[in-house]
Length: 317
Ligand code: ADP
Ligand code: MG
Image 1 (cartoon, rainbow, N blue to C red):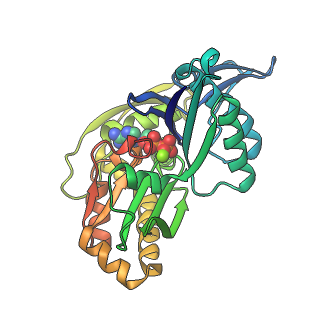
Image 2: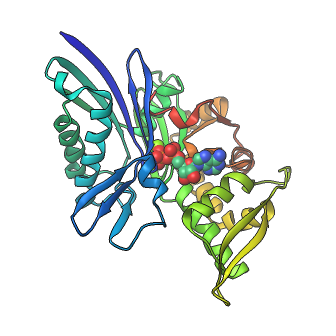
């Protein structure tokens, strides 16, 4: 009677839901808070992310996709159901034929893929399809992926950076590495601990990364205040940190990212490399918003790097 086409980007950091004809209807962190005493879910999405680092010890906050562990797929299933129920009226779902396409990380096992499909079906979807996120992202930014010409897309998310060379509708060479937004946050936490003797939380690190983080010679140098606990006195302390320090903190990770891109280019058939040199490399995902990252990558691999508009929603679109 009625039919709905739905797209879901199940990211390690954020989940997006798109409904055909309507646009993006859900944009929330892939985070779930669980009460260990009752073994029940306390909060999902935005509300759960607010709780990170602020819970009593019997409530723990999980990001079910980060480690890609199968047991956490039960929680993922609950999260998907919760979001889908928000947008699909469950009492009408038997009337509505919903077709759902889910963008999934490249490394999922067959068991995990089945778990995602089952979860979406459980939530009321009639037909479920899975698609690799890099492929979906390339379609989202309207790269001509079905042509016999190579396109390189790099999706820098929370948990992973996925690098893919696409031609004729498929991924020719691809790799997923655990260097992305989360790693940048933990680099900043480690820098604060080692260099400034300051213990900071994950959310503080992320805030500073977004506010102060910048790479490259031509960057505008900003300053921000990091609040945490002094490692020596054990008391609260504030430290001013600037973009140069953040760049130092991230240097190793950026180097690994650069080397991974280079090694993918080395594995890419020469005809496709020629296409990529012509067209440039496309960045999507929230991690690619780190200021100056595009310039650094471009200088290192000697190929133009484009950041697409609305890069965080490329996959779901
Ligand atoms: P995923 O697809 O894995 O869910 P996203 O594409 O949603 O990930 O990106 C989330 C990551 O992007 C987080 O690590 C977040 O800190 C980072 N991020 C978001 N905005 C910015 C910004 N302005 N600068 C740097 N990093 C950012
Ligand atoms: Mg993503």
